[in-house]
Image (cartoon, rainbow, N blue to C red; front, side):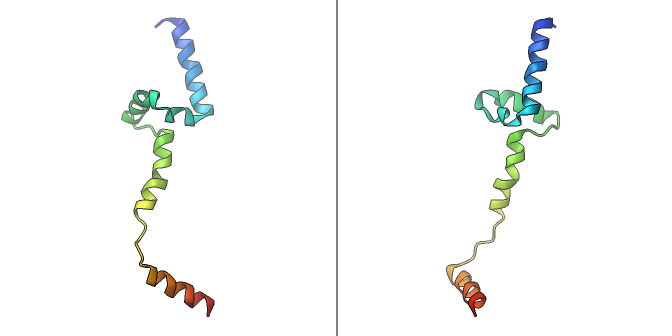
Length: 74
């Protein structure tokens, strides 16, 4: 591999280590996909638990919430 390109790659990896949010850039989706295919975790995956956690929230009706609020005030 060309030593100049190898050095550029090393610098890019250092940037990713210092600021993983770089990988959220849509133009780097191919690189995120590659990292993930090797079993690595990207910054996008690290944000995924927040999204997943929201999907596990139990829906409660307004009446149930009002009941809890009323219980807390009494």
